[in-house]
Every structure is written in C-alpha cells, then in structure tokens.
Length: 112
Length: 111
Image 1 (tube, rainbow over the protein chains, first blue to last red):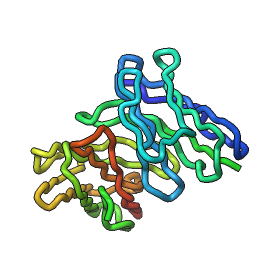
Image 2: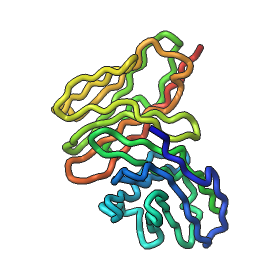
Image 3: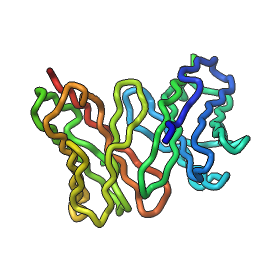
Image 4: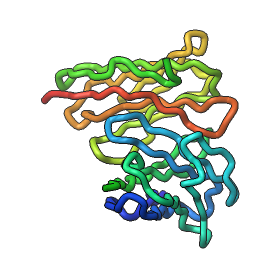
C-alpha cells in the first residue's frame, strides 16, 4: 500500500506566521492523526480525525491549531501565529488502533 | 512515571548479538505497538500485540506482553548494523483513540 506523503519535508517560518502542513493519505481511510516530536523528545499526540471530524484532541491542540480534509484526500494541519516552541517534527498517520498506524516521513518545522 | 516508558534509554551491542528493550505502562490498554525511527525520519510500525496475547513473533522480532505487570519487551535477535535506530513502544488506552509513546530506546549495533 502506498506510503503516507507529507509536504513540505522542511519548513522555516517567522514567529507569528501561519503554516499549513499537508498530508496525503489513502482516500478510503477514515482515521487520520497528527503527532509531533520536539527534537530529542517523545512523540506526542495532537489530534485524531475520524469521518471528517475531530474525534479526540490533546491538551497541546489548542485554538492555535486546526485540521481539515479540504478535498477528500489531502489532510492539513494549520498552525496560526507560530511560536518558537512549535518547532518540531510533525507526523501525519493513517490507520487504526487495531492494526497499527502508517506514519508519514514528517515535516520538520523550524520557527525563527 | 509516564505511560509507555522504555528502558534502557540507550543500548550499544555488537552485530550478531541480541537486543532486548523493555516498556512499562500505567493504564489499561487494548494493544501495545512497537515502532522504529531512524534518525530524523518517520516512524515505522514493527509489530502490534493485543492485550489478550502474551507473545508474538515477526521475523527477527519477538514481543512479549505481561498485562499483570503492565510491561512489554522487544527482542531483536541476531542484530545487524542496519538495526541501529530508536525504538518506541506505544500504547492504545482503552479510553481513547490516541497512541501514547514512550521516550524510546536508542539502539546502536556496532559492526
């Protein structure tokens, strides 16, 4: 099965700017997730998305974040007004808890 | 302690040796998964063990799960230099849809 593709692979943005991270999973999957990993730290859950709605979000996923599936195949994570501490690897994943996830290769976000 | 803690944090072995990594967790789970991450890359799913299973094999990987002790181990037999990576356990709690990852074990296999 094709991999999950994330774009861009690396993005540098000025503090306060908005960024949109994109993910192309398989269109017939229902479950999608965003996770992030700050350099040298553990992978943290951000949000799960089921049937085009947020099903669960973590305490990290505040009003600064939003997710969309604008065209039925792409899956986006928008970060408004980025902060320095948003610098991290952001991973999109598809799959389900019964069989495991397929993760994308990630987008490295650097906020300067 | 946090959900999904691995030990050791770092492990260095010679090629051909076996590597054992352990994971402990706190809450009730549906399953436990192990993932591998090469430096700066994405996570690769290795193996999933359900809460009603005690042991599972996949190639050179062997995973055990002890729900009474809330712990799991990942054994990599006959290690290769290409096995060098970080290994994470992740738990699926019965109460939600998220995976909770541990801190990871950095495995170095020396040729």
